[in-house]
Length: 101
Image (cartoon, rainbow, N blue to C red; front, side):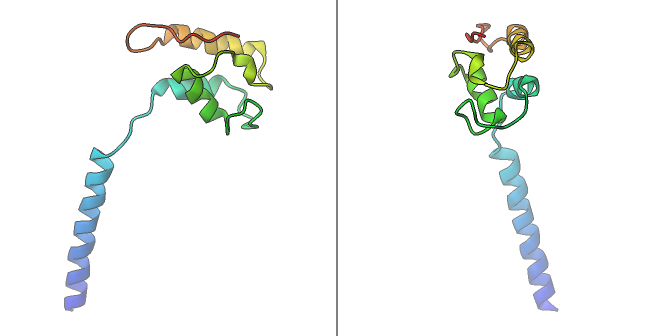
């Protein structure tokens, strides 16, 4: 019987520790990354030299990408949609992300 009580208490304490860690140690990603990723072709091919569309979208938002044409399967419709989205969603300081088609 004591084993059940000790394991129950231990499980409760570990659960509270995990809840604390999930709340106070979380990292919030820039919501624009998801918006850019939605507008990419979504092949996750790696032709852009990034390990998938999520990483490429993150690099675009962080300003590490100069030209959207690095995404080889992308078309002008994708590029135009991304540029329009970035124009509508500037950085927190109001500056625009400098990326070209």
